[in-house]
Length: 454
Image (cartoon, rainbow, N blue to C red; front, side, top):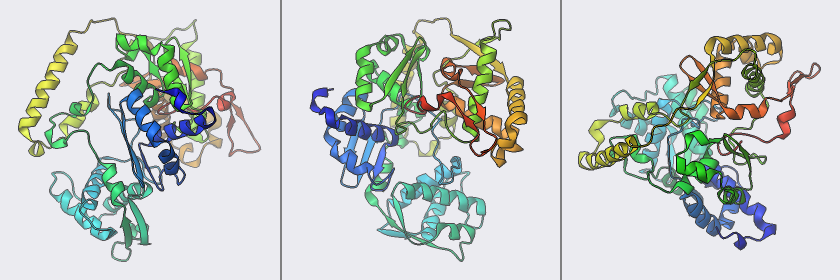
C-alpha cells in the first residue's frame, strides 16, 4: 500500500472511510447514515486500490451506492440480519428477503406493500416448505421485517401509508414505496451463480494468498488466534509489516498476545458490538467473565481442559447444503465444482497432523448456577424482561461472549478462550441511587469489541 499518497492531515478521514466500508459493505445515501456516502466517494480511488491490494476485496462506487464485495474464507453465523427492533432473522425472514429482492428487480419505480406481498407469496408457493399467507399475523410480521431491512438500507423508501398498519390489518392498512433500483441491484451480487453449486463450500475462497487471508481475519474477527491459522499464516500474524498495514488502513491499534492478535476499535465505527457496554446483557456478560476468570485461575482447584478447534467446523456447511433444492441445481457445472472441491479436500488430508490445543472447560450446570447467583444478587437492577427469565438471560449472554470469541459453546458447556483474560480485572460497582445505570467498570475506557476488532 502506497502510504505516502495520503497526507497526514487527511489520514484520519481516510481511515474513517475505510472503517465504514469494512463494517457495512453497502453504503447508500441513507445507510448507515447520510454522511457516509460522501466520505466514501471522497476516498473512492484510494479505497478501491488499497482494499484490493490488502484484502482482495472489490469496491464499486457510484453516485448513489458504494458496494464492497468481500472474499469469504469461511462461513460465520455470528452476524445475522436483524429487524428494526433487533429481532434476529430466522429462515422464513431470510427467504422473504430474498424473494422480495427478486420481485423488486422486476418491478417499476414504485410498489405497494400488498402488491409486493402478492409477488413474494407467489414465489414462495413454488418452494417446498415455504409459503406466505397474509391471513397469518406471523407471516405478515416476518414479511414486514424483511421489508424494513430493505428500507433501512435505502432500497425502499416509504412514500405513503404505514407498514405497521398493513401488518396489523392488511384489509385496512397499506404502504407505498419508492424503489431505488441501484441499491436493489447492489444488494445481491453473489460471486458465483447459485444454480451451479452443489455445496455452499463453492462460495468460499481457496488459494495460497496467505497474507490477504490473515489481513481479512484481522478485520473480520474480534480476535485472531494463532491456533486457528495454518502454519504459514501463523508466521505472518507475527510480522510487524503486515500488522502495520492493517493498522494504517483502519486507524485501529493491534493488541498482540502470545495466543493471537486483536484490533482495538475505540472509535466504535468498525465494531458492530461494543464491549464492555451498557445494558443488562453486556453487564451480566462482564460479571460472568469475572466468575469464569476466578475459576480458571484457581490453581488449588484446577478445572478440566478439552480440545476444541477454533476454526468453523463442517456442521454449519452441512446444514446449509442439506437445504439446497436439488431441482434448481444445474448439474453439469455443479459436478465440475464438486470435483474441484473433492480435489482440495484430498489435498487437505495430507496435512501434517498435530496435537490439538486444549482449553479450560466449564459445564452447563456451573454456568446455570453462576448466572442464577448473579441474578439473585443483582437481579433487581436488571432490565425487566430478564428478571424472571434466567434461562433466556444465560442463552443471550453466552451468545454474546461466543460472538466476541471469548468462549466457545460445546454440547455440554463451554470452552474458555484466551482473550477472555483481557477483562479479568474489571471492577464492578452497583450504584444504588441510579439503578438504571447499573455498573461502572474499569474496562469502560478500554475500547469496544465486535466483528472486526476487540
